[in-house]
Image (cartoon, rainbow, N blue to C red):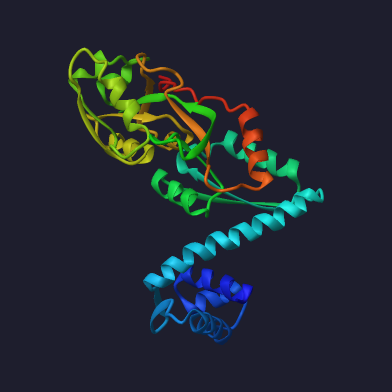
Length: 305
């Protein structure tokens, strides 16, 4: 079986378009079509459904894609391992990260590691929300991700890096905006919005709010800090509870206050890799580097009046 044909198949399965796949592979479309036809003839089965330029994997194609992806990845790791053995720092690090944590400190940490490794290392960064990042980790498309610790963590290596502080976000016209710090008791009169139940922050948030003396009116429905901040930016009545990050500084009409009942290191961010996948040395080097890097916790500060 031709190695190039397997590479072509993997690319076509991912982009699902002959013209685009051929362009990204730097081959002609007839060459790509011939390679796929050769594979299908060798396997005696169809790998794709074709309709003009739009294609989809058949059930056999989906099964084959999983094995091809894993096989090509193992070969790439083998090549990288040999190069590392010879003292070369070459290869690619496929890194996933949540939007909310890409602060100046985070960028400096990534650049610092890149500088230490030199030009031989390429770092591909994928941004996303928690579910898509863990999907990438499970499939092997991502080597390591920055994210909250999953509820079921026995499948993953989780290395603590830093924490996010919990913030009470209100419109600057809200009664709580005049305070310098907020307690759970202060929240009893207001409608509260926060992260949905699928969020890695949900369990921590719910456990904290259950400590309140009175039952709080909480709507667990939102994905991220940007959405929560935008809602209180335009609504003078609601209160948002969110993890403080650099992203929220864009909202001039929102005041962010510390919650005195919450621990300062409220939501911990981890560097996470898949235990089931053997990683090249560059991944373990990256994890060690980030483990020892000093990431400051962003401090929630009220609006200066």
